Image 1 (tube, rainbow, N blue to C red):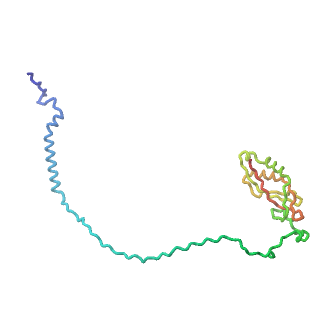
Image 2 (tube, one colour):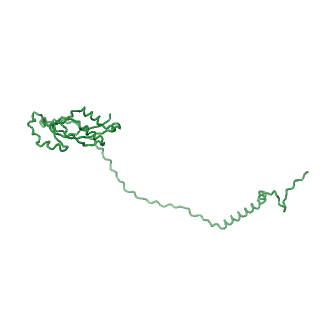
Image 3 (cartoon, rainbow, N blue to C red):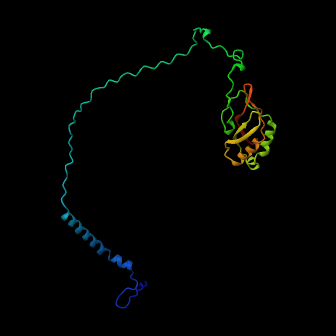
Length: 230
């Protein structure tokens, strides 16, 4: 039988193959019992110096209920009755006496020559500015086709191509012969180019004279000039 090889021993009797793990295993018993002794001493010290505990009173008591007097019962009035719908209107059967009606007005009873003549100063200052002048026959435009061509001609191309239109309200002063003596812008369209175009179109208008019964009178009239794309 062969003998086991001897472990190499360094000078001084120290095992060269003794590892830290081996040394820890050999010292395990000392660490274990030392920790047990320390834990025992610590628990005894805690129990010796820990304050005494006492149970608090956790009982409860019930307060007596106090009776509350309720206010007296209020009597609620009944809801109002439903409002009756109004009755449908019906045609009365009453007969109205025809004698109380106003008789129709005819020219046989009121002939023009019997009516009072217009004021002598009527129309004296009409041309000074737009004013009301009574007339029975309004002036009429006599050259509508020429006015239509002027509208197409004077429509600003930039606004027409952009689809921008508008209405200019014009004042016309027409004398007793039907000639336009003056025209002016009363309400602008909001575009200065359209207002200027309307002034040029207004210069083309021709009218018939206004009549007040059987006399020609000078009048101011309003005419809207509208520029629109079709």
